Every structure is written in C-alpha cells, then in structure tokens.
Image (cartoon, rainbow, N blue to C red; front, side, top):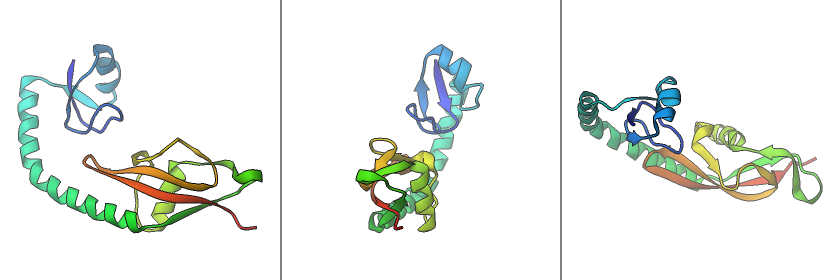
Length: 150
C-alpha cells in the first residue's frame, strides 16, 4: 500500500514522503491517526507541485538549522543529578532532561528529536546524543552528567 505521509513518523519517513507499508499498518494506524493519506495518482501530482513550491522555503529552513547546529556544537551542557555510590544515579537522565537543559541555554528543541546514545543514562559521566534539527541536519551533541553538590 502506497501512502503519502502528512507528518514525520519515526522509523518510517518524513512529512510528504511517499512510503510503501503493509495494508494493515496503513489502514489501521497511519490513516485513522491522520499521519498519512492514500497515494492516488491525483494526490501524487499535488504532492509533486507542493514539493516544487516548498523547495525555496526549505533552503532557508536548512540554513537556519545549520546555524543552530553550529551553536549547539559550541555549547557545553552539564546536567546535575543526585548520585549514590559509584557514580550511580538515583533515577535516570532522559532526552526530556536534556531538552530542558538546552531550553535553559536558549535552544528550544523538542525531546522527540533528541536520541541519547545507549538510551536512558544511569551513571554520571560524559555522554553523546543525536539531535535532529531538520530531516537533513543531524548534530552529535556532547554533554555531561555530574553529581549534585551537597
């Protein structure tokens, strides 16, 4: 079943992509949730025209995302957390915590666009995360989890 995505769907594609999925996934999830529409010949023509018109706007958005990426590479973020014996955290540090820390630094990035390598963090130390600013712009961001001073 061919579908046109209306929104970004993780592990499937980005908005306005033409994707091929199994019938059940398309009919039972993507279409009812409003994430996709059927890829009829007329819908494909409309999509092609929309993509042509969007190309100029897209360049400006990519340039802005690249500027943010450069700013993020210069940024040093330290997330404080309560630590027990052996640098083991009480709880964990997640992409939501990293999103909040970046917001304090002036960069509003939604947590769903942040992927911490290795999943949730359970120990203090340096870590890396991938931040997707745009479909074409990914940033490897280094940060550190430090013990809270008593």
